[in-house]
Length: 445
View 1 (tube, rainbow, N blue to C red):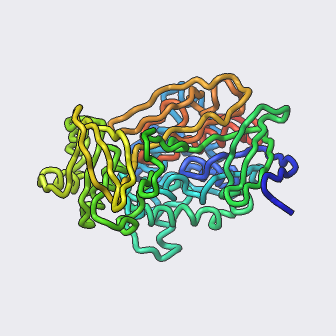
View 2: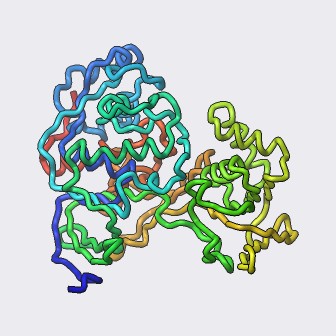
View 3: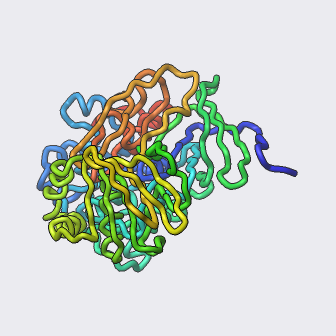
């Protein structure tokens, strides 16, 4: 039977999580029964004695806390879990973490992701270093040091971690925490509508194109800020020698490459291609001053910014930066490609073998149909992080005008480029759902 566009019967779950990256995956683990409890920690008690005294008598899971009241008393829950997970920036031993996780009964949930778990990190460059030490990228319920012990992996938790090591860690989570049967990978949500049971979701299998239907009472939307890759919208953008994702230099034959961007991913691509002996033309809309400000601010702490600074300062003609520039068109010639660039108002023609477009992406809210309009807040920071965040309640990440809809991770209002404990909406969302379901009653120590 032809499976294309075949629609299955509607499947219902109490909670559906859309997105399997660093925001969605830990929520699945907590809803799957891995609940946080306060654990005595010498370093936490030393540095935050009032918080330690406040939490020490509390014997129940922290998911039972009244987070709104905590926030009103000057203890935002996101900050609380930051400090419990990372009471100090340098990791010394597992006992410093003031959290322990105990396995309780799971709630009925399903996680749907269009790739493997790990989200956009699956598509990051193979050798890309993160902005932070590995232990800042970990989930509190599975510290990187514990993963290293269990898997006999040769990593330092306090060093910058690269994509290939981080994604291996993320890929261990479903099996390690018995989540596999609650996760659908390579399935893309294409529509979300209101339903008498809460929400109605339509999805398409990425491979077979089979359609699926779901309903749920609670929906967690945790798809990240790069759902839709931006396009240049110029002639020739779809030619075969033009790619919109850089992985590794070995993927590019020939010698001359145009990199279009100006953000961290483009910086990485331009640098790595140059170090692979390619001739690189780096095209950016931004000014030299803006680009150099971030590079110069970061070069002492992040080695890849130090490297691109060194390359630019060398003035090597094999690495040409074109600021205040944009691509006008891309053409296919008999022996190579031809890129037309508007550089400060002057037209420049570049013969190339490849064009790499790394201009970021945007969150996809177009899937929501029939709901009150989402209210957006613009969020920017100095690392070029920008996203249309949704107006949410500060202590639960629930959308203010759509009950039982939650924004996970960076899509929740006010959440910046959180490096330490970068999964802070995990506990507020899970707690709100479990408390609404009567599994835990809101309380304070």
